[in-house]
Image 1: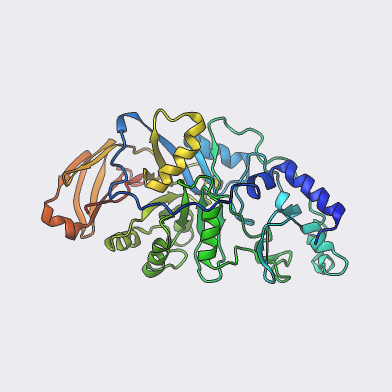
Image 2 (image 1 turned 30 degrees about the horizontal axis):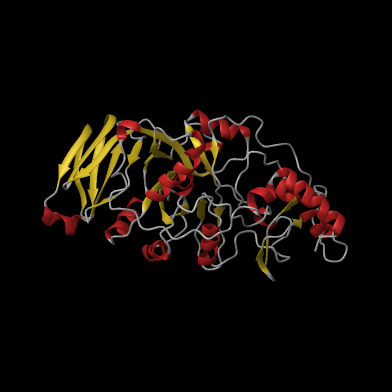
Length: 415
């Protein structure tokens, strides 16, 4: 429990920084479960009057430099997915503020609660604290202090979408992003350097995944937008059964990352296309996401983001909502470099027509495998009524002639 002066000081700081406004005072009304989307997420899109909004659904960013790298690549919808702690990024976030304190805490004895915790007081408490037991280099960093704002200049067209990467569930090895949610978990203490874990403060979410998912849904900014993504499923060691269980739990579990650049760099476990098709063959709706994860921090030519398709006449005040609805309804496609663009996609009377902005190696994929490969900037392909049950769905991959770019549409189901 914080003493009254310390508590007042922390609350004053938290309010000034906007922490409690953004996290604790957000509407906590439970979002109504969304109905499952139609078989064709692109059905009602007018490609003649649509905006292609560059968006990162899994990007770590806590510096002006990384923000500028993302913006230069055309990403203006930034669902930044920071962790340690897992907390949505704010425009006015300051360096080190979550080392000083945070307005939520998870204790092994007591569970997850939304209440202020002052880490300086916890560590230095004369009776229960353990500051003096820490190595000298760490002791000298205490008391923690809040530094300057992370962003000195945020471009006017950038949307900072609520999001965070949640991990260390008690019954699931996966990592999950909370697109459009203000839910926060974990602490700053990476690798238990300050021994918070040893003293009962879990580093990560430390909740059963269904409990964590519900808290994510309860804190959605818009009830009809965003949701939960399953990050790097191959790197996390998740199998088909585990993913299907999560998809079946709630329609706001949106899908899986089919490309994660950081995981590909670490151990060649960045692709999940085979798993994606295994899921789609079961008839389950599962969106695919393309992400850079950490790669943009060191590589301005990072590979992986999404392009959201929103109406061209969307008012600036509605753009944030429109982007999250696009994620919820599968109205987006995946790219690696962004040089390829989806100009149109129509599926009528069992005929698929697709137009790109330039020539690529196009693959048409269904439940039975690759149906067609061609080097072109457009395709048209039809199926008979008898094919529907066997083919189940169709999705398109377009690979750049330089072998670096790739574009992936969301699946369109025949039935």
